[in-house]
Each structure stands twice: as structure tokens, then as C-alpha cells.
Length: 375
Image 1 (cartoon, rainbow, N blue to C red):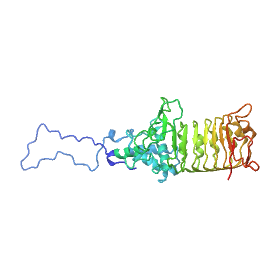
Image 2: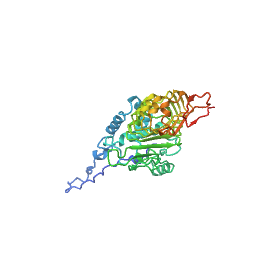
Image 3: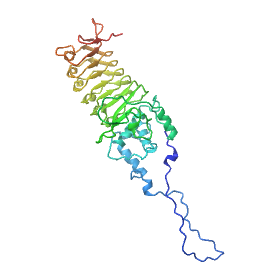
Image 4: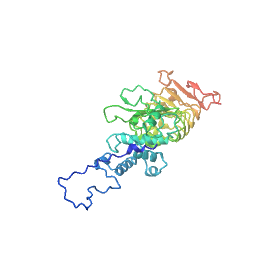
């Protein structure tokens, strides 16, 4: 979206009126009066204090934002004008009408966060979403119209901390705090997490495109939910660097490739929901590292190989779906021992695999709560 020109019209310092002289020289009547005004310059003169933003010239501010972006985006990507990251940086520098303007180094998460969120918008084909698209232009009427088309709020998880934006429905890329864009919420605490992204939450809103690796730099994020979209490509390995993520839910998309090994480094993860994609390859034994996991959905993919015995190390697991894949072998005894109908009972109440027909199942599972009937 292109900003309206008047939004950026600089304010020129007032031109002082000529000071009347206390005494006027005696002039010959035939001599023309001397001109007291200075010649008009073709280039307006700005006072330094009024032309600087964040105590930086426009060029210096642009360079500092570029260097900030380069801390999370490689230079070849940022130099490609067609990349979502380059579009985000251009928007941030030339189109974002946030007032006051954002400074590249304000000592908080805000500057990098706004760049990453704008990159996410362009990467997920923002502008073609079902709602919350950016305005066509930055006039009050266009912004109001875009906001009227945004009704997405985040899922109200029972968190105890105060939050920013959990009830806000502003369109994306509008001139408000990005925490108040629809479908997101930020921490509202009084510490260094204040204003940092806590939840990104979309379901059946027409998001497409690809997942960008920069998202992992939202290092306070706990809920990353993009359900029922058309996101394609691979899950970035960098997502394993999320340190506080509790829910990673990408079900009903078109994601491909293997489940990255790095995902199994997320020590606080409670829900891993990747069903109904096109993921392939084996389930890594490192899944046993997710010892806080309670909910696991990997069904309706193209996963192959055996279900690893290390899955039995997930003693907090309550729900697990493996059906409609190409998995084979036998459900490990270590997993069956966690069922809630054992003695002593475990927590695993729902366990589903391709264990039908019973005389020739793809996965032998005597302890499954149900067996999917393969076509």
C-alpha cells in the first residue's frame, strides 16, 4: 500500500518577516529601491531537529533498519526486491505511517518484531487473506474500511499474564502497534517481555505462501497457530530455536518434506499438531525429547517407517494420532504402557493408528483406542 503524500509533507520553519530598519538612507528618486529579500532557493531548507527521525537522517535510519534486518535475514534474500523480507523493509521505511515513527534501536523487541511481522504478512500472501488485509492506501477512510473487514481475535487460552491486543481487530500494516493487528496478541507485562509477540493465531483465513525462518526471532512467542490454510514448502529448521513455544499448530495445510529434527528441541512444547499436510519420512526417535508434550497429531500425512520406541518416554502424552500414513511395524510396548487403562494407569487416553484390518494391519496395535479403517 502506498502512503498518501500529505502524510509525509514536511513542516517548513516559518520564514521570518523582514525587520524594518530604524533609519532609511536617502535615495535618489530616480534610483530603484534596493531589494531586501533573499533569493528563493529551489530546495526547501529544513531545520536539523525537524528533518531527523530518531535523531537519524532518513538515509541513516534506512541503513540502521537494513542492518537490523540483516541480523535475521541473509543479504541475498534482503537484496531481492521480490522477497517478502525486502517488501517488508521497504514498507517499514517508506510506507509505514506509524506515529511517532519507529526507531531501529529503541532497546526493545519492537523494531525487529514489526519487520518480522510485516515479512510474515507478505510471505503468507497478505492482501489475499479472507480478512484483516492491509488497506489499499493510508487515508483515514481506507484504514477504517480495512479495519471493518477484520474480525480475527486470538484463541483465549487461560494465561495468567496481562496481554496487549488479544481483543483487537485492526487490519495488518495499519498505523497502530502491531500487537493490535487482528489474530495476534503480545505480552502486557511490566518486564522486558512487554509488547513482545505472544500469540499468532489464524484458522481458515486464506493464509498461503511459505513459512519464513525469521519467525523464530519472536523469542517470547508461546502460541503459533496457522490452521486450515494453504501454506506450502518445508517447515524451517530454525523453528527448533523457539524456546518458549507451547503450541505449534499447522494442521490442514500443504506443508512438505520431513519433520525437522530441530523441532524436537522445543523443551516446553505441549501441543504438536501437523495433521493433514504432505509431510514424509520417518518419525525421529528424538521425539522422545518433548517430555512436556500432551497432544500429538501426525495423522493424514505421508510418514513412513516404524513408530519409535522413544515415544514411550512422553509420559505426559494424552492424545496421539498416527493414522492415514505409511507407517508400519508394531506399536511399541513402551507406548502401550502409558495407556490410561493399564495398571498403574498412564495418561494416554487416545491412541489411533492404521491397525485395521486386524488380520493384516499396517501397524499392529493391540493397545490402540481405535483403528482407522483404511480405504
